[in-house]
Image (cartoon, rainbow, N blue to C red; front, side, top):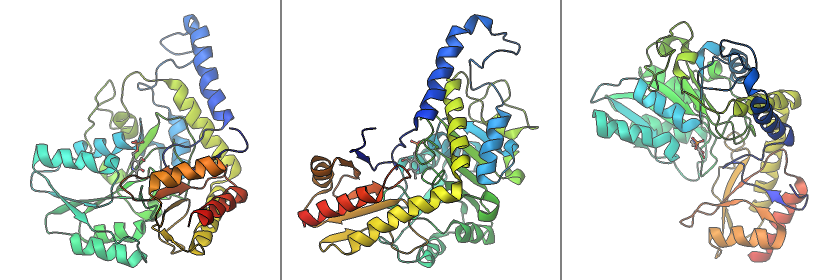
Length: 372
Ligand SMILES: Cc1ncc(COP(=O)(O)O)c(C=O)c1O
């Protein structure tokens, strides 16, 4: 990436490092060069992805989220993870599913389909914007729980507003009411620390092509040991009934590009080399710098919480009199800075990752100062 260009839209897709990209491309080239050498009963490179167990890769994902590999299924992305759960839990008609009113479609539409097709009901907790405290969010869920609620499904970090949700408290609330808790971690993997055991969720799915900087086309789904056996798979292939390795069973998806999994592994290796905690600290430090700076520019409104536990690398803000798309355009025109306009005048969402810098944030603040 040219040094004078600032990419600030990791919330949509991460900028994969060359090491990851080379791993993908090298695998694709080598696998075709050596295609005639591959013994289909084992030996040689992997030519297909959706049929194999990938135990080693799933073990590395397990290290990242503190779970055994057998509880982790490889998917294509977060959307696929949430659909595997919505369709696989076999919820009877009349069961209630509680989500938030700020879901990404990838965390919402599987539940909408279920309501239409199977007669479950869908209700929503109203999340205050901007949210001021974790308690406010827990209260919003507590108010929205109904006698029929069987599932609570919510993001770890919300897409448009960058709210880090109080997931541990929400899972504990769900448990108290005998409700399953499902977390959409699309914006969290490679961003903030994730420990599914500590969080206490029943299931967690994610898209590592954002903050983990893996190539797009990868995802994972974790389901707790006491629940995974009961989840039907939606995509059945040769291992559809393998209850010895439930993650393998749920990850059946036919032929795909194995080079993408090689890329995912390279991204995980890099992440572990740098250190997940160190990555998180840097992302947060840059996000805090942006939020602090915006707080000092008159005419700006920060939509993301400024509460220290509730925000990290995503910052959504508005500038008086400058519509989101116009603001995005001005940041690019004046400073080669590329965040993302959210549309419908919901402002701009700005991502800070380890490939961003203090200088880029300061340039951003200066341009915003000129516009107000
Ligand atoms: C919170 C959240 N959930 C789900 C998704 C959907 O991810 P994917 O398109 O990779 O399935 C996104 C994508 O931006 C997201 O931000």
